[in-house]
Length: 134
Image (cartoon, rainbow, N blue to C red; front, side, top):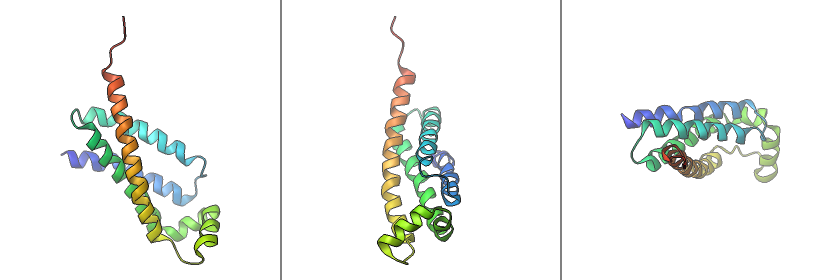
């Protein structure tokens, strides 16, 4: 049952991946990730009372994997809708399409997002369980 919850909580990664493929502005994407992290962190402490760090890490990891997997599957469309990324890639790697590179770096970034989500969830849980002074 816990795996299903983690899977469902990670599905918004597909939505963010699709928005990236459509070409959302690069300066707006971090805000989407921040809002998603706050929502996921809050929901995680409702679903998991124990081992919040490991559940949050795997949720974040899977969210990132979904995100980058969708981008790599739709790479040509991504490059068409994101001309800055296409230009940067062309300058550094030529005409070679970067699916493998996106998958590899996506795993690293997904692990970082999972770690950040784990710390954020832990912080939300501590804040929720703290009692006000007085």
